[in-house]
Length: 404
Image (cartoon, rainbow, N blue to C red; front, side, top):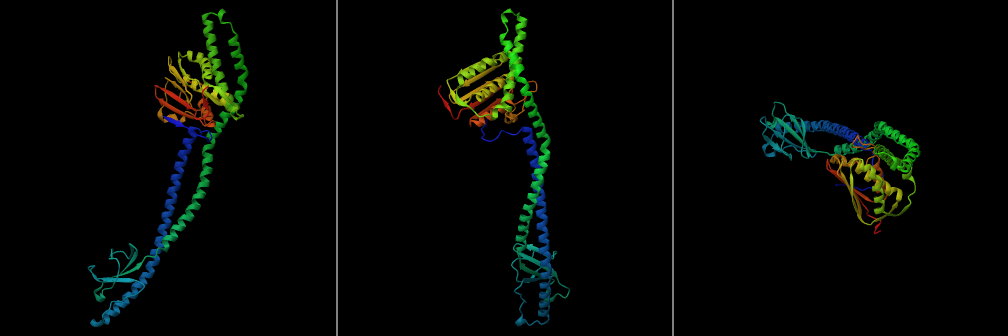
């Protein structure tokens, strides 16, 4: 069951929202990949610069240590033999086979073919020695503790420049998004304007048709003419219902609410009678289970809720179907035996201009109006639908219900 409750503005058009989500997902992915790439390149460049600086420094240390080893070899006194040490670095010497001759280093050398590399918290520098093999050494390693200042600087740069880049790309993103959505919004605005213009022209002819249909004397008509008149009445009431929705959408929804206690049971009976001729055209029957209930709400708005729930149940019902209306103190439920809704479309039924059956009339605004009124009065609406079996829409009166 889908439960919808909201105090905010009405939902965006589904197609606009889905397009927006796709655009943002693509844009955010590209921006994230770009920032990650730039961050990695900057980090690597800082690391290479660190290794370059260390290579120069450690090469000088290696030359100093090599001279000290050379002097020790040439002035070798077994009783006074001391391997040369320097507080600036640690060193080790290995023979031609890579075996250790002597070492002061914290970490055992890992590479004999790379001149500089990182090992845990230290930097190793390798200097191959000449063929004189002083003290039997072929390889001289120099080790120093890694100075992590470069890493802190690199991360700080990434944060600062990454944030600035993100802000710039966000500005461009909003600009591109506006351009991307403009055609869709223009189309919706055009449709809204068309509805507003059309609404003003509908009232007089609809009222005239309905009034004349009611005044006609059916007793002097033949069966054939009575059927024709019934079809005219059905068409006129269909257009009248559409006109009421359009009027509410373009004019009434912004007016100040005039809340009062509404007898829901009587209202539902009246509206079922009104829609009876429409339901009869599809041989749809009503099953009513109504208890006394009243709601403190604007009469026009609750009428729009009831009308649209009933109209929707007729419109998407099957021929010879049924509509079950249940009214309790706490809720109103309208269930049909119609075509049902795909599970992935249930979220979209309250979107403006959404229609699931192109063969049915209307602009797809009825349930959007229902949702806006439900939101306004902080009520709750739930939808349960099974494809090809029917749909149940339930409105819970969380506040304001009493026994009539």
